[in-house]
Image 1 (cartoon, helix red, strand yellow):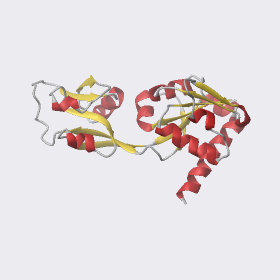
Image 2: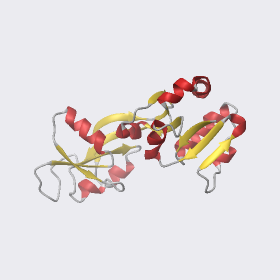
Image 3: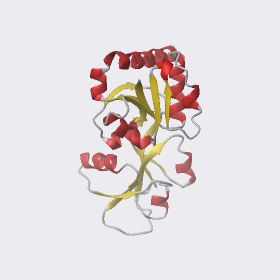
Length: 212
């Protein structure tokens, strides 16, 4: 069986929608209970449910042949994978946000500080501009960074922007758009090409059908 790594939530549910459009029964993985590995033998698929940030790791190491993950997670992980399909759903933006007047901060510091859960993306983004920054790693309520003076700006996912506005922040720069991507293991694509292409092309056909 081919193994697909997914994280519970909206991306997994949208992926199941596509697979069901191909005639694959996803009743079991939609309702996994406490199970983390779920086999659907009649479709030749096994699903493993993991944390979103772990999807690229499982796929790179060949534990999973395929995975669905946000482009932001892929950029941050920097894993050796094939990105084979932009699924289009889960759309949002990866942005730099802060106060319109960047000097509004309750602490004084010499280095420009960026609060984020994407340290690699932040370093690369500012590095391309020739800027040196200090990374403040946060994994929850990143918006607090500029509000309490911990950082000058944040680098984070923005959907509606309502949380930013509620905290007096706004988007200052857009780093890149983000959507869900189908990724695959490099070796699997060579050794199990026929099985892999059946899933890839089937999902692509469903996306084309949906857009018509």
